[in-house]
Amino acid sequence: MNSAVEKILVIGGGFSGMSAAIELRKRGIEVDLVEIDPEWRSYGAGISLGGATLRAFRTLGILEEFLEKGAGADGAHVHLPNGALLATLPTPRIAGPDVPGGGAIMRPVLAAILAEATRAAGVNVTLGATFETMTPAGSGVEVKLTNGQQDTYDLVIGADGLFSKVRETVMPDAPRPSYTGQAVWRAVLDRPAGLDSTMIYVGPKVKVGINPVSKTEVYVFVTEDRPQKRRLDESEYLDTFVGLLAPFTADEVVRVRAEVSNTSQVIYRPLEELLVPLPWHQGRIVLIGDAVHATTPHLASGACIGIEDAIVLAEELEKAETVHAALAAFEARRWERCRMVVKNSLRLGEIEIEDGDKQEHAGIMRDSMIALAQPI
Image 1: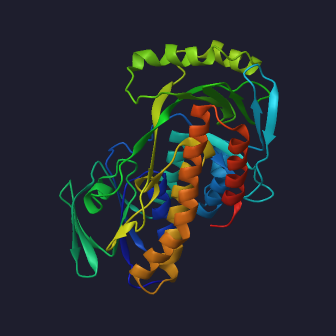
Image 2: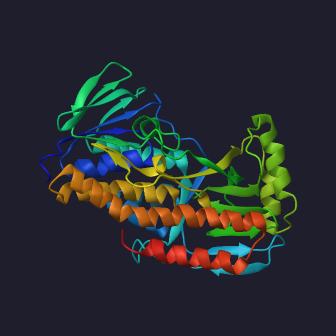
Image 3: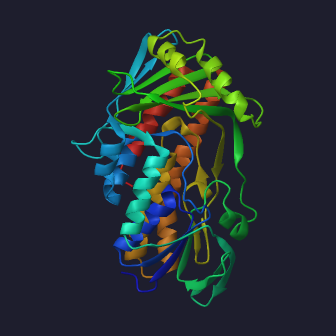
């Protein structure tokens, strides 16, 4: 193990941050993780996951628990609004012949799985705080937390998401998140009998998906064009969501629309993207996940590339002779893959907004899936 890295601070207890903490502890590094939310919550409904994400889960050691508490599936079926089948998208079994090619899970459930694994790994977790100051100190970084704690670390990992305070502090000139012109709605319902894979229904300006997230639940996602980013009052959520489903006459969508109610956990989010140019580190502070590459959900790979960041960073820290060499190698391995996911997802959204070339859309999906199947 690289003796120059003995103690690391992870700022942010989301999927990327927890994954980094788990992988670093496997390598004998002391890890402190600080999370600003005192309850360590994860907001949102379901999250769709591709085979590359399940491969990363296997590396983390949480795959079996995901398969028990989430839902694995092979293939995704694309339909017209009336239910006519357009295509079945293959989902290769990237994580192994015994593991489905994709799946989904409730975000809070996945967060709880990772939180349990983080604590079991021996990570020192501090909730309800973040950093107040970070100052270079010799061959480390002196960090003062908002709760008054202070310590010096060999490396600080900023994994604090799309609106990263770490990014704003160490990279004040970095790009800001950009609205893409689309928004996504999500809701959770009882799982209909016989629904065992992802169903997608493509309308002129709205796309509906139905995806199992557990043995008893599905989540429904609706992507719509919204030229202007604006906040909606939660009192509008239910009626707006049901209205977006109205033009779809496919049996499954009609059934879903009839079952949506005040208990369906309807969630609305404008879609934003971010790609920060290299380098992703300043001195001994490095950014991972949404803090440097936030993507729309069109390739179901946002969580994937953030978790992969964590795995690759730990690998490079283990084998490099210096921290600088490890960070350079990490960035070299991650840049093209993350750039591809962000930009291809953005282009898929643009094609949907423009009602553009369906062959281009299909080609981007195919090429992206091939690229994601490659080793990291």
